Image (cartoon, rainbow, N blue to C red):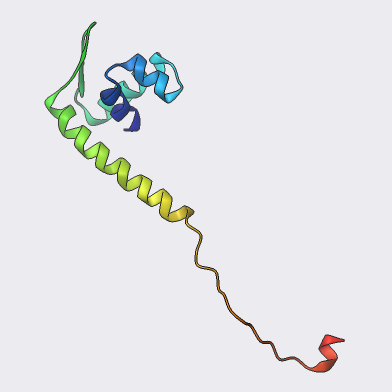
Length: 98
């Protein structure tokens, strides 16, 4: 889905590939896999431009929402839990300290 979002925002498969640090064929395969998974074309491709299909427009909105939710999820896992602070007193027999 992130590749799909990047393709739409970049305006081409090759521009998306450059931004993602991969090759154009890889980006194309990822898009094809997503289209096969949803069972419909998401982008109409021509030699000069890309255009979202009606399904692609709906998918883009949902993909952006899912990507944002995923980022929030990852961030919540990386945040360190609160560390206890303060004075801790331990009472033990004197012999334990020796």
